Length: 220
Image 1: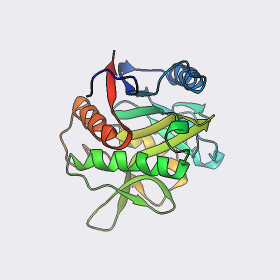
Image 2: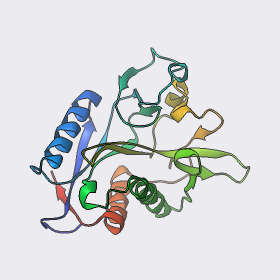
Image 3: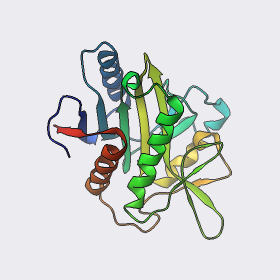
Image 4: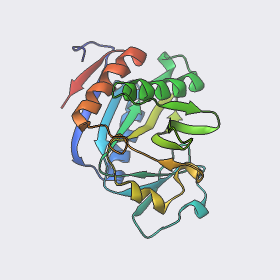
């Protein structure tokens, strides 16, 4: 990672499982501070306990098993998604006022960040028109989702972000229709036969973030 510079992005990694309401409160407070000019940009990497979150386009019928885990309204774009242990969540608090104010380009860069990161582990991940997230195609024609994207902007500052399936319990996704798409499945790096630690994934995320978004600095 790059050293301390005024314009670098704070890169924070939390250990353990962070409760969703706690994480959202901290993330929203940081986004407000960025918008007010009182704090710098930040990427926050963490894991959550098992839960379902509903985006602004979520349909109640896509919550197949509402009693399985806690369900939270998130305020981000998108539909239902699952978070849980073994999944790397990256909350992305960036100031688009100094990054071009181009939401489409921003989302494409988030997708590319994931694609480039997974390529380091010999996983070919791809975009799909009309399907949010990042996908892996199998030789038999099946396609599975390996990463999700859901962001919100307020005063041109982003929050919420991305999630990558390293080794979550994939059966937990069966309690929802992930992102409203029921004709495709979900997968993970470990399910694809990749032996990857969370620390290795984090290092790859940092390297590839810097290529697209600029330098980062590590914070405890």
